[in-house]
Length: 337
Image 1 (cartoon, rainbow, N blue to C red):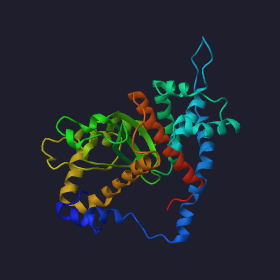
Image 2: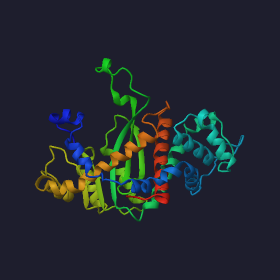
Image 3: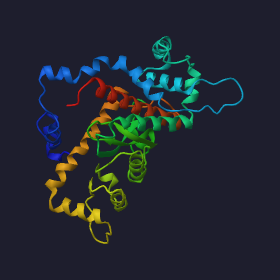
Image 4: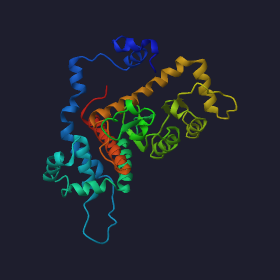
């Protein structure tokens, strides 16, 4: 929910505004002993990360189509090195000691050079492999989840956007960003599928590929939550075709039932207008996906280092895969509260 103009100053002074009251519903008082138990998995996350990463990557079969020339590096070793570098938020030179540690533990067969990693970051096939790994990592929760959250976020192409205030008229901030569209599970907060686009891309056209990928991979989705950026007759009809009855995609101010042939659109719009409290009781959980974006940006920095679009997309997918591996570590060695 947006903060009213009247309460902007109240927010700055730390008093309770509308958005704070909304977020307080998801926070509970936690005693010190329970907090220790809930965060115990963080103590061993760095130690467990290589093993979970290795088990996940070894589950997929990657064929090497090279027939001539000098043998190329094993693509699985390249992915492991890139994930280690992304998890540590370091450059290749600063993370080389961690890569050598992986080699000494026989997690990788060889140590790829910096030029090899840079060349692989420009590989379109690697982008498809990372998307498959993200979906594969989420299947651990396939029997426990039935609610899907869909949203998008921006990440800057460099640290800061320069002197924006002096160039407001000629500068479009979305030109300096890449956009990440994700489908996230509600309880575990693991990401099932991710799509990367330009910063000025609209949200609604990517609703169908996100939902289709989730359903095609065997997830039994019964409830769908999304903001007004995905509000359209086609998206509601798509959910109806997949037999998803509990659809709570926020409506825009000019939404009407006139000339509408969609059964689900009419039903939810009437609930939104006539019984908003019942609507909002379910829709309020959409804010959980904002915490997922915050976690990714805090742990894997909130900007992109690479310059080319394909390498920027691969960097974003590596951030998402690192997030999923951390969620798996929490499931195996921690407790969900």
